[in-house]
Amino acid sequence: MGTIILMGVALTLLLISFFKNRKKTKKSIIVAKKMLFETIINVTGLLLLISLVLALIPDELIKSLLGNSSMFLSGLYGAMIGTVTIIPAFVAFPLANSMMESGANFVAIAAFITTLTMVGFVTLPIEIEHFGKKFAFYRNGLSFVLALVIALGMVIML
Image (tube, rainbow, N blue to C red; front, side, top):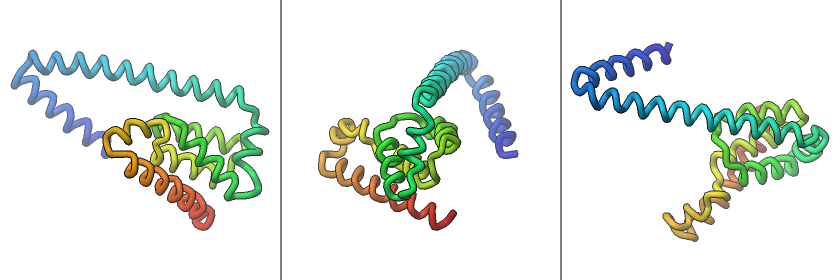
C-alpha cells in the first residue's frame, strides 16, 4: 500500500513539474532513465560477480570458516569478510542467504552484514581525509567491536 501511495505522490509531483516547465521535466526524465539503466547494469553485474565467487568457493570452506562450532570465531571471520567487502546492503542480503545455505551460522551472517554497513575499511582513506585519522580509526574500531556484540546478541535473541 505504501508503494502505491509513494508512486501516486511521485506521479502527481511529476505532472506538476511538467506543467510548470516541460523542458526541464523532459530533461530530468531522460537523466533519471539513464541513471536507472546504469543502476540495473551495476546491480546485475554485482549479483553475477557474487554468484561467480560463491560458485568458485567450495561450500566446505564457507562451512568451516563461517559455520564453525565456535560462535565467536565464526562471527569474527564473518566480521572480517564484511569489513573488507564493499557491496550495497540490498545485494548483501541475498548473498547472506546463499552463505547460510552453504553452512554459515547466524552469528557469522549477522557479523558480516553489520560490519558491511558499519565498518569502512576500504573507504578508510576517504574517511581519514575528511574527518581525520583519529576519528576514522576510533569510529571503525568501535563499529567493528559493536558489530561483534550485535552478532553475538543475535544468538541470545534467536
